[in-house]
Length: 78
Image (cartoon, rainbow, N blue to C red; front, side):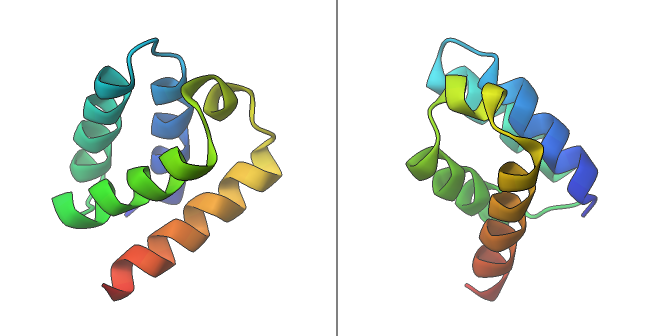
């Protein structure tokens, strides 16, 4: 799964006003990038716990990248 694609999808999902729309966009792109639906859902849930959609959009790259990596690693083990 391409990490840069996931990060781009997180940023784009953060632009949405509706959390369900953001989730759908993220999951679609994540699965299209090679992630399984379960792992992609898990990653989004982990990011959603830490960031609001607005925060995802405004998050500093360094923090967001680290959080995506940690969520992906955690979710891949489940």
